[in-house]
Amino acid sequence: MSETIRFHLDENVSNAIAESLRRRGIDVTTTPSAGLMGFSDEEQIAFGIEQNRVIFTQDTDFLRLNQEGVTHNGIVYC
View 1 (cartoon, rainbow, N blue to C red):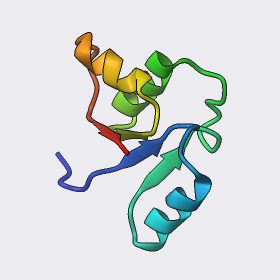
View 2 (tube, helix red, strand yellow; view 1 turned 180 degrees about the vertical axis):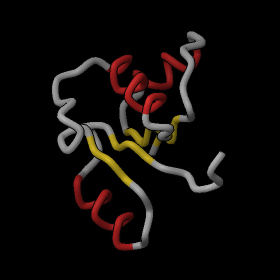
View 3 (tube, rainbow, N blue to C red; view 1 turned 180 degrees about the horizontal axis):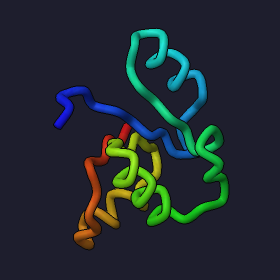
Protein backbone atom coordinates (compact mmCIF):
# COMPACT_ATOMS: atom_id res chain seq x y z
CA MET A 1 0.00 0.00 0.00
CA SER A 2 1.29 3.44 -0.91
CA GLU A 3 2.14 5.90 1.86
CA THR A 4 1.33 8.85 -0.40
CA ILE A 5 -2.06 10.46 0.14
CA ARG A 6 -3.94 11.10 -3.09
CA PHE A 7 -6.83 13.54 -3.07
CA HIS A 8 -10.07 14.02 -4.96
CA LEU A 9 -11.43 17.57 -4.71
CA ASP A 10 -15.19 17.80 -5.05
CA GLU A 11 -16.94 20.50 -7.07
CA ASN A 12 -17.20 22.85 -4.07
CA VAL A 13 -13.42 23.31 -3.90
CA SER A 14 -11.77 25.97 -6.03
CA ASN A 15 -9.62 24.78 -8.92
CA ALA A 16 -6.94 27.18 -7.62
CA ILE A 17 -6.51 24.86 -4.62
CA ALA A 18 -6.07 21.87 -6.93
CA GLU A 19 -3.46 23.73 -8.97
CA SER A 20 -1.60 24.83 -5.85
CA LEU A 21 -1.49 21.27 -4.51
CA ARG A 22 -0.27 19.96 -7.87
CA ARG A 23 2.54 22.54 -7.93
CA ARG A 24 3.66 21.01 -4.65
CA GLY A 25 3.72 17.53 -6.19
CA ILE A 26 0.49 16.28 -4.64
CA ASP A 27 -1.61 13.87 -6.71
CA VAL A 28 -5.02 15.52 -7.13
CA THR A 29 -8.11 14.86 -9.22
CA THR A 30 -11.13 17.13 -9.33
CA THR A 31 -14.78 16.49 -9.94
CA PRO A 32 -14.68 18.27 -13.35
CA SER A 33 -11.45 16.54 -14.48
CA ALA A 34 -12.89 13.14 -13.51
CA GLY A 35 -16.12 13.79 -15.44
CA LEU A 36 -18.19 13.69 -12.24
CA MET A 37 -20.00 17.04 -12.40
CA GLY A 38 -23.55 16.61 -11.14
CA PHE A 39 -22.83 13.20 -9.62
CA SER A 40 -24.01 12.54 -6.08
CA ASP A 41 -21.78 12.75 -3.02
CA GLU A 42 -22.04 8.97 -2.69
CA GLU A 43 -20.77 8.60 -6.25
CA GLN A 44 -17.89 10.95 -5.45
CA ILE A 45 -17.00 8.74 -2.47
CA ALA A 46 -17.23 5.62 -4.65
CA PHE A 47 -14.78 7.25 -7.09
CA GLY A 48 -12.47 8.02 -4.18
CA ILE A 49 -12.57 4.41 -3.04
CA GLU A 50 -12.02 3.09 -6.56
CA GLN A 51 -9.06 5.43 -7.13
CA ASN A 52 -7.71 5.14 -3.56
CA ARG A 53 -8.23 8.86 -2.90
CA VAL A 54 -9.23 10.97 0.09
CA ILE A 55 -12.15 13.35 -0.52
CA PHE A 56 -11.23 17.02 -0.03
CA THR A 57 -14.37 19.13 0.34
CA GLN A 58 -16.11 22.22 1.67
CA ASP A 59 -19.49 20.44 1.62
CA THR A 60 -20.94 19.49 5.02
CA ASP A 61 -22.97 16.70 3.37
CA PHE A 62 -19.78 14.60 3.42
CA LEU A 63 -19.60 15.04 7.20
CA ARG A 64 -23.17 13.75 7.46
CA LEU A 65 -22.32 10.74 5.29
CA ASN A 66 -19.36 10.01 7.54
CA GLN A 67 -21.63 10.18 10.61
CA GLU A 68 -24.01 7.76 8.91
CA GLY A 69 -21.16 5.26 8.55
CA VAL A 70 -20.65 5.49 4.79
CA THR A 71 -17.35 3.78 3.94
CA HIS A 72 -14.66 6.05 2.47
CA ASN A 73 -10.87 6.44 2.27
CA GLY A 74 -10.94 9.62 4.30
CA ILE A 75 -12.57 13.04 4.19
CA VAL A 76 -10.78 16.35 4.58
CA TYR A 77 -13.24 19.14 5.31
CA CYS A 78 -12.00 22.72 5.06
